[in-house]
Amino acid sequence: MLEALFAAVAGYLLGSLSGSLLLGKLKGVDIRQMGSGNAGGTNALRSVGWLFALGVVVIDLGKGALAAALVPLLVLLLWTPEADPILLGTIAGLAAVIGHVWPLYFRFRGGKGAGTAVGAVAVLAPWCILPLLLVWVITIIGTGYVGLATVLAGLSLVPAMWLLGPESLHPALGALAFALALLLVFTHRGNLNRLRSGTENRFEKARLLKRRRR
Image (cartoon, rainbow, N blue to C red; front, side):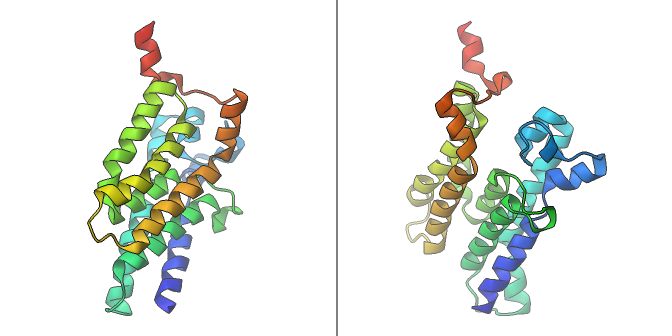
């Protein structure tokens, strides 16, 4: 299907517009040379500051949502009115996450894909957002490990997609949940390895449970 190929290419090119790297060029910094070296919101917050990180998150969320919503609309309006919008949105959304992780415009060195994934899921399966955020926040509060929180939130996408979604769930959405969960585990493999070795950094400011116990 040519429309599916178009959705994949368009989503990937859109996803390759990395928020931290674009804003970094304006600021004269390369976030990949700072902190953990990751071109994502957490490293942006730790290395540059909250305002820069907020801009990064807005761009990364936005491009995931835009890929999932706009690309199918363009196909339906300008190309094939009979096309499956959910399938096209799923392809474009997943491709945007892949583009964020391996961006064409930045020598294939990007972020870990979480923000862009949330943006795509917010458009395609909004019922998953609340449980995903709950898992992420609870893990952050309890452990302070951002990477672990993101991995667990990504894994929670699979049961949330099936259990909370419509009775006749589109097969593409089920496939998307599995694909995003696996991709987030892969992109956070360094965090998981550091957790096993006891060298993973905590985000202590968010670790509220420890503070209350003191």
